[in-house]
Structure formats: structure tokens, C-alpha cells
Image 1 (cartoon, rainbow, N blue to C red):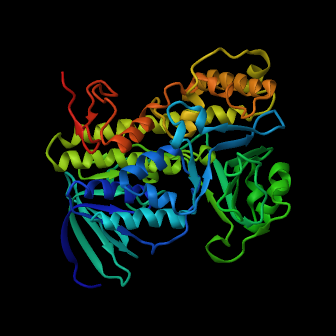
Image 2 (cartoon, helix red, strand yellow):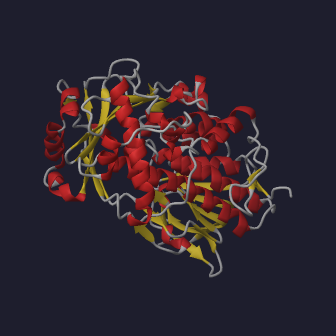
Image 3 (cartoon, rainbow, N blue to C red):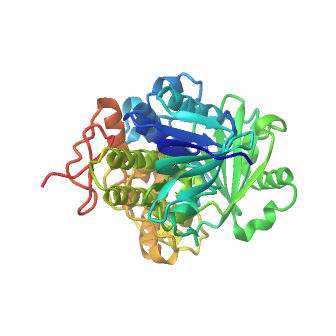
Length: 498
């Protein structure tokens, strides 16, 4: 081991995925010195390929990569299609029905993360971030009262020490340093699922205008995602609960084939397809224990963003949305403290409260959605049979699945939100029943009438407005009592005027 090398920066970011590239770029844009390290060499494989409009039209615009992403040839998605619940017929939603993301922002992309993540990382370089690939974080430098930097090794095994005002852990669910903030990682009592996924060429596409949609199909053991990444390449994954864990034992490729054969809609879509067996998409992968949240998101000198802090479930493609949204919030807090505008505790309490709120909305909504797929004896389907839908505003469902959401704080224990979930499941059941009953072209209008996510639009739409017009959308009232508001350009926090 060689003699440690020392350097000083304002911020060191661990992880070059969407969360790390976003926070690094938004901090470097304010003139601060940022070092970003990643153990991989880009382009590298990553799952999480279905993006939401808030990421494309909000975060990507703030980062200055909108045109590059639009020109990358990614598959355009206008919504999602589900074979979910009691009805055997698929139903779809379109982002365009939401008045807050209608028009030119009513689409997102299905992306090859190897390409998308490299676009964001190269953009960070152009914006002044020092990027070092092939570098592995070892531990944070703990000064007792605060984190004071990071120890890492480069690709030659040389040990380095970096002193910094902040360490940002954006290294994902396999983070080696997230415990540096203290606290523990708590796994969900509800989402105890296992994902098994691989890639195919030559799979069928849904009929237009839904050809680019993610297709999710439920079956007895769980559900499948079917994501068209190009005219030929498709990402296919099965999510099963632990009660069906035996289904994924043995050879992963054979297990995936068995599950495909059990899900008629996916089997039909893949009838002319060929599994990919070579290159970065040639492996069938397994992931488990992926639904969790940390009891702390920050401490003096360190903050967790994206999957290093929490992850819910892939059913509504919220992963990259939560990663980039949290990175934007964290960048505000870092910039605020580095510029001496608001003290660190207040700045990062704002970050954590907002991120937990967004995570909580997705968590509770998805609990309801999974209850929607339960058997006929469940609360959901009992409500479906006996309850009629009450009218409510046309904004809920698409706002959530479009990533323009905010909601109540996250609670992991299934029982702690059971009452709210029961009521929400009943409303969603009514909406889904109406979809089947009225034969709507999109299956859209009745479904959007569920009030479970009636407040889902606010944060994402504000991000998109800020990206378009360079200023926040009238954020003069804090989200929480005694809280902060974004500055006009959205780059920092400010104390609201009395």
C-alpha cells in the first residue's frame, strides 16, 4: 500500500449513476469544486430502464442534456399498459391526460441505461466535475462531530484520502459507505419480492399508440415487466413474492423461461423472440431484498441520495425519478450550506423531509396497487364488487406514475398504513371496474378519478417549470411548518419571508 495522497474539494460524490451525476452537476454549476468517483468504467450495465416525464422534462432540462437525450434514439413512451387485476383485458394510461404534463412534456423514454447514464456522466465532466472511474470507496473519514472526507482506491490499488465539506453517497443499493450517516437500513415488511430479469430480441410490440409503453402483466406468482428498448431489444423481468421463491431456484435462465410460460400475455408477446445470451444483456440476473429505507438520510458532512437512501418497487418505474429528484433536493442543501445562507441542520432536514414525503407517496400507493391484484376474497375486490366511484379531480394516477408527485411521509410497516391502504384500494378498485365497464379507449378517464394521489402533481410540475423558465413556481410557502422554500432559480434553499 502506498503513502496516502491528500487533496481537498468542496464535495466528493460516490457513484456516477443518475443520482450522482445530477447532484454533482447541480453543485458544480454553482462554482463549487466537485469530485465524483465510481468503481465501474462507463458505459456499464444497469437496470431501471423506464423513465418518467419529470426526469426527462424536469431534471434533464436543469442539467442541460435534454437535446442530447432526445437525439439518442431512445424508445418514446406515452404512458403504460397493464394487465392487472380481475379483468383479463389490458388497460392503458396516457401521460397526455394529465393537464400538468400535457403537450410537449407528455412523454418519456425507455432507455438503455448504459447509454443514458453515460450521457449524464459526460455532461457532469463538461460542467466542471472531476470524474474518476474505476475507483472504489473504502470508508468515510469520521471526525467525530462530522464526516470530513473519503478514503478510496484507484484502479491501480493506490489509496487516496479526500478532505471535503460534504460526502454524497449516490452509490446505490449496494453502497459500502451508507452507514457513515448512522442509523440502519430497514427492509419492507410488505414488498418482500424477488426480481428475475433478462433480455430478448424480436419480441412483439403493443399496437400504436402504445408500442413504446411499458407493459406490466400480473399472474398467479407475481407480475412481469416488458420494456421495449428499441425496435428489437426488450427488457423482460418477473417479480415474485417470497412465497413463490421456489420458482426462481436453479438456473436463472430456465427459471425465467418457466415463469414466462405461466404468464399468457408475456408468453404471447415473446412467441417469436430469441433470448439474448451474449454481451452486457446476455445474463439473466436476480435481485432480492430491494425495498428498504434508511432510518437516517444525513449527518453533518454526509448525505445519502437515490437508492443509497431508499428504494420502493419497480412496478411504476419510480427508481430513476426518486434518484434524480432526491439529488436535486440534496444539491440545494449542499449549495445552501456552502454559500453560508442557512445552517446545515435546517437545510438537510428540509432535504430529508421532502425526500421521505415523495418516497412515502409511492410506497403507500404501491401497497394499494398490489392489494388491487389480490384474490377475490381481498378487501380490494370486495370493494370492487360493491362500491361505486365518487367523482374527483382528473389528476391523480398519471401525476404519480409520471413522477410529478408529492405525498405523505413514508412508513415501512405494512400494518401501520393498512387503514389508508384499504380505503385507497377500494377507490382504485372502483376506478378499475369503471375502466372495464365503459370501454374507454385508453382505459384512462375513470382510473384517474382515484383520490389516493390527489396531491401528486406539485413537485414534478414545479421542477419542469423551473427547467423551462429558470425560476421556481411561486414557492413562497414552505411545504412543512417552519420549513424552507427554493430560491427563485431553484439551486438553493431560502428562509421564507414572514
